[in-house]
Image 1 (spheres, one colour):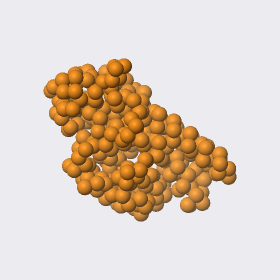
Image 2 (cartoon, helix red, strand yellow):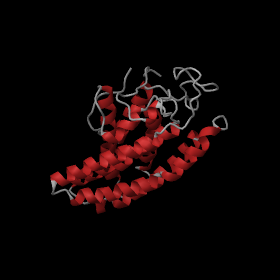
Image 3 (tube, helix red, strand yellow):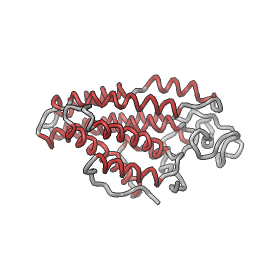
Image 4 (spheres, helix red, strand yellow):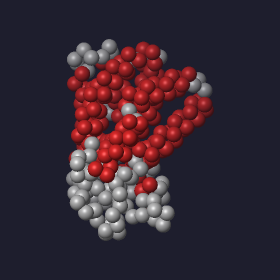
Length: 280
């Protein structure tokens, strides 16, 4: 079973939730895309629950933004399922999704990095074009969503942080967490919204800005996914390391080391490193 290849933008937030659950069912738990997808599903459900709770100034606009935003992630999933390359910002996550030396928390951060810093600005600009308004008219609700994300992110981080069985990656992960945050990413995304909006009358310049944004976010994604767990060499990189739990979250191994001492996944792979088994 593979994720849905339907690429249309979801019509409602409930449609988004259904599609994310579909993807969750189709992927193994340890798959890096599945790790991010579970986080994204939790966030989407939290936003949906607040649409009728007086949390937002303009709930219909927030719901429409949610659907436009999710559509970009779903397009990346559909492209990968069809054997095509997803946008540059998503390629690190899809390329390294099966690498056992990458901790689940890294997959979650890489997915948030791609979706927030690249997809979100484009979705906000598209929302403004559809509604005939400027970014200032949706800014208050944009920032209100930050509170929802902060609460979900803190819970997920605690759930994904390594326990005492993986002390060797605790310090690198702590450093990684200190160098990336949802709040900073969304502030950067809002600046990109403003730049794209100013460039809306200059299509060539807007495309160039978008391409540069896609590339820079992709580079950061590679840094976030640098394998942290040491390679023990016991099985030539073909089986779980001693004491690991195989492919389940929390039990990982790294790939083989080349002559330079660098794990294979620390380099940009020529071909996508996808999970061999997509079934749960």
